[in-house]
Length: 230
Image (tube, rainbow, N blue to C red; front, top):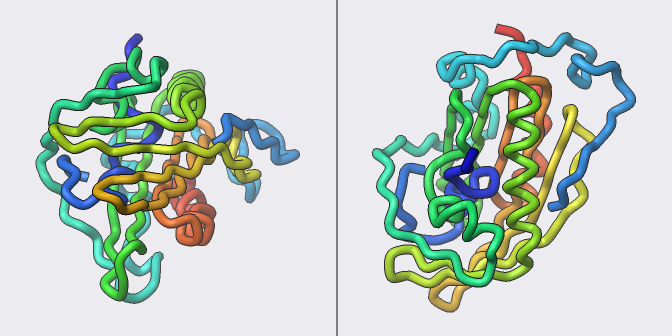
């Protein structure tokens, strides 16, 4: 099955990093926790049934979870410019939208982006997906593998060229599987750095994107809320 989108929320990461990006919105590493399968880090049972989009929406972080001066960005109707991938055959095979448009191709999803009013470069986004555990694991792994197989490549979004450099990072010891990478976007002579961490626990996949410090600070909180029983 063809995956229609980018490496775990690269669309959101690109919009966080590059002004004017259209739309609404690393290592491939398994991180064993020394816990029985089917349990969260706290030992709570993990659902084996995929969750609905509405259920996922109730598990997203809120402004109060992030601290003062954060505001949730209103969602907009998605609009994707033509995208061409240059210098990365693996991503080219996944299609142009796999490089900057839309969300991961899982049936149930919920997303939120938060803007910090105190300074620029402090925005953070969260995405939650749900599907069977094998589908989540396979789809996420394939996209991270494709991106990390190309340390440097270029996207042309509409008429705008964007250089992207990827760096594998050690995955955090969270969930059943975890992936992490650092993305450097270069456009208009300016560089923007975005960290992405994805964590799968059972039938839930969490993706947090933003500045490295913010991702590290909030990923565990996001994961705990995502895995809270309804």
